[in-house]
Length: 70
Image (tube, rainbow, N blue to C red):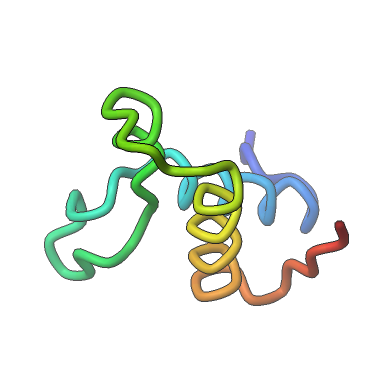
C-alpha cells in the first residue's frame, strides 16, 4: 500500500517533511528544512512572525504547489 494514495496526501507528506526536518540534516541540500527545533528549544526572542516566515518560505521553495491563505 502506498502511503500517498492521493495527490493531497503526497503534498501533505512533503510539507510535513520540510517542516520537521532540521536545517542542515540533508547533506546534499543543507538549506532544506526549518529551524523549528531551534525556535522551540532555544527561545532567543524569535517572534511568531519569524517562525511563520521560516516555515512559509521553506514550503514555498520546496513544495511550490502549495498556496498559502492567511
